[in-house]
Image (cartoon, rainbow, N blue to C red):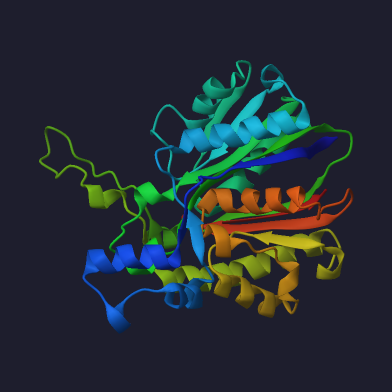
Length: 334
């Protein structure tokens, strides 16, 4: 017995921001112009990104609830039949209440157990793994798993090396109890010795008794050592994908799609080369959505499903990496 994905959904802000529009903003903030400025080719060459979605007032819980509502509608499931809601995010509305509880309130899933998971861009894989254990063991019959981010509120718009990468969005899956296990294999991991290379949302230990300076706006911004992250991502994604396939006695030829975290096209190209496979096996949509952290894998999975590219019995691999540093790879039969 196990669990199976029965529906996908997404909620994306309507506002699409092109590299040209973003470049004008960055150049204005930094006083750049001419050859020094940021344009479409400058961004695309470094990341493969051409545009991203940015909220105009919605917060993370709103996007998460929108994605949850879509999976309920598409599957014909009543909100009161949901037993579990897990939301992965590194940009929640609050530290508490958790995003799962906020989604529960918005969609009316009054019976559900609700909580959040913070594993950065690997978060959706971690959340799906936890939900699979709940559903597979019989503790829950139906669960909604969401990846949701509003990274624009944690972005330093004067930092041209990071602000061009990120976008906002949310996506979800509905899983239910199944007599056969559709999650065939997984590998989750963490490398805390590299926790400093990708951060956001620092809270200093300031209080009325110690004189420590309280949190500043800048403390909330995403900071990243790009070279460290690139090196980690390429090595860990490659080894983790092969480890999961080897355990199941499968090869890349048995896989229809690899759905990677949509961080940077150069990372995906390097992983494909390292694995000795065609890049076409990797589903890529970062050119239109940028890096949406924990939302990127489910957004891509939802697109594959909406476009009719997945058939029952297809084997796909979900693979992510992120702050922590963390990684997660999952082999799924559709």
